[in-house]
Every structure is written in C-alpha cells, then in structure tokens.
Length: 184
Image 1 (cartoon, helix red, strand yellow):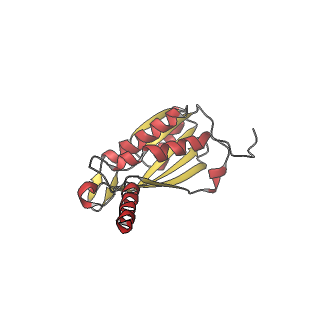
Image 2 (cartoon, rainbow, N blue to C red):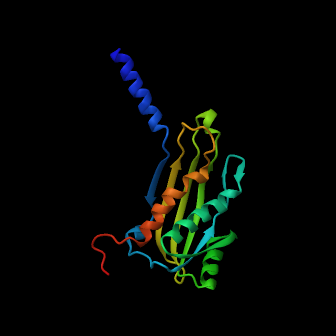
Image 3 (cartoon, rainbow, N blue to C red):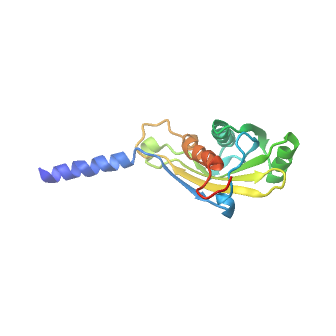
C-alpha cells in the first residue's frame, strides 16, 4: 500500500509539472544594467518578420509579438506606436526618428513552433530577441532573449502567442525599474 502511495505522489508531481509553461529570459547586452528608460516616453515597436518552423510560416506571429510588446509597454506608462509591417532595423529606426519616438523596440522571432500538444505531447515553443535602442543615436540600451515552452498536459487551445504575455510584461517592467545603487 505504501508503494502505491509513492507512485500516486510521483504521478501527481509529474502532472503538476506538466501543467505549467516554462519561461526564461537572458540578457544579451552589457547595457542591460543601464539606468532605466524614461517612463511615459514615446516608443516605436517594430514588427518582426514572421516566425517559422521547418516549412511552415506563422504569419500572425509578427502582429502577435508586436501587439504583446505594445500592451506590456503601455501598461508601464509608455506612449506606444507599432510599425504597420515588418521592416529592417534601419528602416524601423528611421521611422522611430520620423515620428519623434525616443526609443525603438526591435523584436526578432528566432523560433516559433505551434504543435498539437494535446495529442502529440510536443510543446509549443517561442524564442524572441528584443532590443531597446535610443532612437536618436541608435545606441542599444537593453536586449534580452526570451525562451518559452508550453505545458505538455493540455486539453488543446494553447498556442505560441499564449507564451508571450508574461515574459514580455516582465521585460517591460524591468525597463523602468531602478537597480539598487542607481543614482537619480
């Protein structure tokens, strides 16, 4: 009887672990510890090229990614405009200058996989790199890579875009947060 209790505990633990998405953010640039960017400042969010996996291109991934960034930055008090279409870094930076944005946020989708996890057990995956640039100088201020994987215990309905909100919101919060020891 004790053995079946242990088995049940392990099964419950595995199911609980399979019920949560996993997220990881990794700074990509030394300027990540720089002073916070100006809250309320005008920001242009670039629209990335669509994500793809093998031969499949996920056209909506562009708008989903820039939309998640828009929502997260607006919730932190920034005035946000989103580029209307995917464009190169240089064109996006020019657009940011033309509209008077102080910052240019340039996301790039490195991986985007939408699997039928509910029957295959293969999780959805995203990998997004986000750079924040001073629009006037083009200098990089912050950069992060966000990796996220969906839970495998799902009844369907989960998609890669569902993995964006939490890590993007955490990144947006970090932009205005002062680190201990930062001077005013």
